[in-house]
Image 1 (cartoon, rainbow, N blue to C red):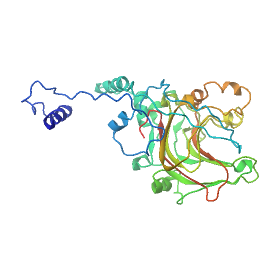
Image 2: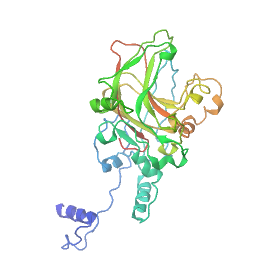
Image 3: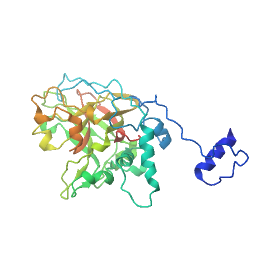
Image 4: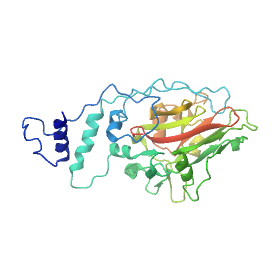
Length: 346
């Protein structure tokens, strides 16, 4: 068995075709290992680790964007209501049966002598931020190979920051950070270094509000030359995966910018609802079709109630991790350990 292993290894590295000359009838090149089609992405998988590329492939994190195996959340919550209830998808499992054809097609083009702009499939692998990876820094990489459909005058952003608090509504909520911020644009670098993620404590205080207080952290995708957020098309991402811990049930929101968030949707932004996770980090993946508007939004919202998440992906401004709950002594701890597109490996 060891002899066959080394023969296969030698063939893969193309260093010694004659190393196994005593067995001329044996396969010179090891055959691809078929993926287990029964594997799935667990809705409560362990926290992100330094698993290899092969490990990630076998975990079926890559699927066709048309996969319907992910069950969408059927529940909705009214933001800012003490009667809001957070719901979960019954399964985040996805099939890996379509992996072989898509991976082989992307790898076959690598032999070309001329430069070819990375395909959408390859870009998906580059869109991945992991708090344990020192090279990732504190910015979520928004890879330039997806910018063909973006406006020409914008630049990628991706810097983590406080996205929203309830101060404008009469609340007094805040986030207590474990360390002081760094200087400069990437001010959360010290936080990321401290806890291998974006971590803090959401101290919720409703103040004069009549509904539950909230805070959110997240990132803006792109900005124009004046520094203003710009909506961009990220449909090719397929959706979003996140690894996190949280002492309160958070939500993952799609920021569409003030012109849509406030004037069209009355703050009812597309969202999916996550479970509380205190014992260990969990990994959740959602296709764009899982992001919906809350049921309390009345009217047709100028067509936004149909295919909400898919439409949002075509003009996305940012992504927010939001905690909204009743006030509690000591607040609610959280840690965003990793985030990627739907096909990413985190």
